[in-house]
Image 1 (cartoon, rainbow, N blue to C red):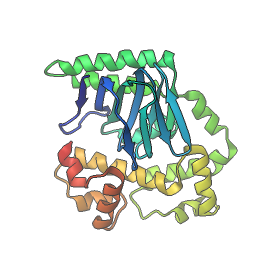
Image 2: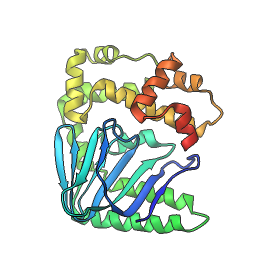
Image 3: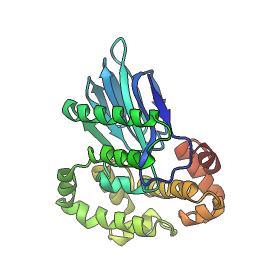
Length: 268
């Protein structure tokens, strides 16, 4: 049951943080989710994935992609449950939500699963060669993500009047000014609605609150800086990520990822 975790600093736009096939799946419980987009697919047997608001049985060839920090558990429902999986990182990690239409959960069926199995198996073979072809693996990772890009879903969102009027302008404001002292009140005032209503719209369209989206976006940017600028002080990374108080930044980072910023940098 081969499995590979990425250890050196990440310099590619997109690459695999972990990847594996033929994994005899144990029960997993992550109250704080996983810090990267990660995909799980059944090879043999079947298992159940539980997330807030949903429960999914994954039969052979079926899979699920979860966004970072989505609370989840999964465990076998058959005698043995074998899976393949992949998680994604890279210097362009913060662009992934836009690629995926900001969807937090994406299901895949057997036909798509066969294509993803072939891709993951091919990447495992690339990783087995030394030295590895990092450029090709980055291209493979992009191809992997493109299996989840749903133009129809994105068009559906842009056709939603409430999304266009209230959510889309706030997303653009966050992407443009995340490093400023933004609050949910500021963002809701931008579109002239209450913070509570804005968060309800975020939950409806993106399956997260306004605050959760803002924090997740900031932490993604912080992770990029931690890895792409290894000599940059944590205080400066905090400031560039929208946190005037470095201690608050460290606390939020650890709450979402399970490690401190410096531990994250060392482990990668």
